[in-house]
Image (cartoon, rainbow, N blue to C red; front, top):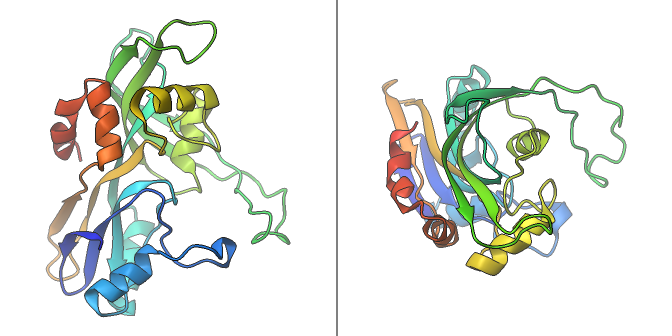
Length: 254
C-alpha cells in the first residue's frame, strides 16, 4: 500500500518508494508492481500521472483523478508554477570559493538521453536543450572510511536540489557535471563511493528524494505544499552521517 501524502477531489500525492516504476512499461516486462496501478487499486478509481520520478528516486509524486485535472495540473508544470525540491547526498564538499554554504545554479544544456530500444529510430544527434538546476549545500561530513585509494577518509555533502527545467536524469547528470555525483547512482555516479557507503551503512539505493512539492489547488487556487518523509534506508544514511536533525528541518525548506 502506498503512503498518501495529500488528497482532494482532483488529485492525490503519494510517497513513491525507491525502485518502483511509475507505470507499466514494455521495457520492464518482468516487473509486477507499479505506482499507478497500485494507487488505482488502492483508491478504486483511475489516476493520471502528471509528472515522473526516475525508478530509483523516491518521494512526492502527483496524480490527477480525471483527465481535465491532469491537463490543468500539467499546465501548471509547463508554466513553472509548480515548486519541486529534492534532497540528495553527493560525493565531496560542495562549497563556494570562500568555503561557504549557499545557493548556486547549474546552467548546463543536456542532450536528450535515448533508450536503445524505445528510441531506436530517434535522431542520435539532437541538439542539447537548456537545463537549469538550483542547488544548496546544507551540511557536510568527513567519514573515517576509505572510498578511494588516494584518501583515508571520504567527504560527503547533503544537498537541496531544485530543478528549474525537467530534462531526463537532470539532477543526476548535473551533479556529475560539477564533479559531485549523487551517491548510489549506478549510471552517472562514482562506483567506489557507492561501494564505500554500502559497506558502511548497508544502503545501496540512489540517495535522491523528492521531499517537497508545491502547486495551486484546482478547487480554490490556494497554495498546496506537500512534504514526503525519507524512507528507512535514506534515514539510515542520515543517521550514520550525523544528519538526523535535517530530516525534520527539511520540511521548512520549500
